[in-house]
Every structure is written in C-alpha cells, then in structure tokens.
Amino acid sequence: MTGKIHSVFSGGTVDGPGIRFVVFMQGCPLRCKYCHNPDSWLLKDGEERTVKDLISEIVKYKNYYGEKGGVTVSGGEPLLQIDFVTELLKSVKAQGINTAVDTSGFTFNESDEESVKKHEELDKYVDLYLLDIKHIDDGEHKSLTGVSNKNTLAYAKWLSSRGKRIWIRHVLVPNLTDNDESLIKLSNFIKSINVEKVEVLPYHTMGEVKYQKLGLEYPLKGVNPPKKERVQNAKNILKL
Image (tube, rainbow, N blue to C red; front, side, top):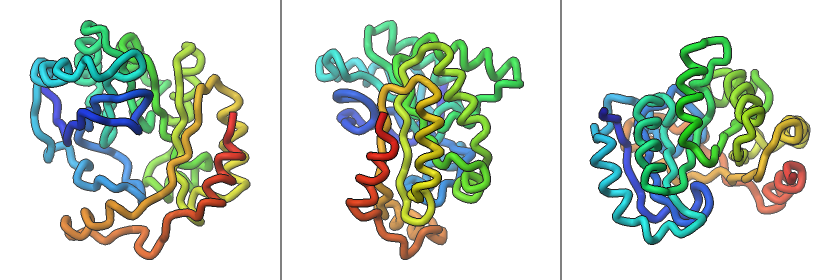
C-alpha cells in the first residue's frame, strides 16, 4: 500500500510527548485561514511512499524515542488517507513504538457505517489523539476553515466514549478564535469529555512566504500573533 506524503521530520518535539518521528500526510479538505502549509492541501502533490519504506526510516531512530516519544502522523489531514495511516500505525505498533495522530476529525461521520468501521480499525493502533478544534461555534468554524465542526465534535465525543487519550489543540488567532465567550464555550465542551491536556497554539505568520511562492493571497495579511496576555488568558480559561 502506498500513501501520499508531504514530508517527514525525525526530531519532532511539539507533536505529542517526547521526541517523535512525524509523518506529514499530503491532502486536506479544510482551508484554514491560518494554515502555514498550503502546499499540503492537494493530494496529487505528495510523494508516493510505501509503509515498508517509511518503517525502515522510522526504526533507525527508535533508540531516540524513549518511553514517552514515538511516531506522530499529521498533515494536511492524515485521515483523508485513513487506510494507509492504519496500515502504517499497525506496523509502527508491531515495532513496539508509541503512536499518535494529529487530526481535525473531519473525516469521521458517525452516521456512515463504513466511516465508523474505518475509524474503529485505526483506533486499534493509536495511543494518543491530538484533536484540533479550530472553533467551537459552527458558523465561525465554517468561516475559518470552509467546513462545519460537526464531525470534529462528534469525533471528540466518540473517542472519549472509547476511553482514548485525547489532547485538544486550539490555535489562538486575534479577533478570530480568542474571544472569551467562545473560549468559555470551548472550555465547557472540553470538560464534558475525557481530555488529558489542552494546548493553546499562538498563531504565527511563518507560512505567509509559502502563499507568496504559490501565488496565493494570504488570508490573514496584517494579522499579528496574539499578545502574551491573550495567550495566557486563553490558557487560564481552557485549563483542565
């Protein structure tokens, strides 16, 4: 089986616990205004690689992962290629390596039996989910990403009901995702499920140059990263 890969990074320290080998999958159905990897959107642009090929690279660094580290599959939206990711993580687990998936949960459709089955199969091989909740309000989520947050929130509840380890990630963008009312609403949702950790990720402008290279207009031109006090405010509201 082959998958379309955007890139890999052997020394990740921000994509789950410990030192991690990060596989960035190609393709994403969301168009987040703050996305810093627009070159990951189109599935056709990725490099085709096999599970065997990736595993041979992953095991080279096995001694560095330790007890906490491991492999994280990110994106793009990794579960757009859920069959490949399932096979990859099955092989990773066979090597005794910890696994994590960083996802928006958009591919999960609780009313679609086939979708649920695929996510159940994947779940057998995932130790930790890094679930990105872009915005708790559905209308604001659509404006921010182009899609509804219905599947994301349903996936969070589904994972919680299965007793999975969940870290919630929320990108903090001034005047878009940092207002107190929305943060309180998000906090209440998080407290309604079993969450191990909440990460507030301050918006940055490092992806702007990629838009220029691709000939794309940067959606948040002129928006600066949030001030330290706003980041701390969000952390205070969202703390478990």
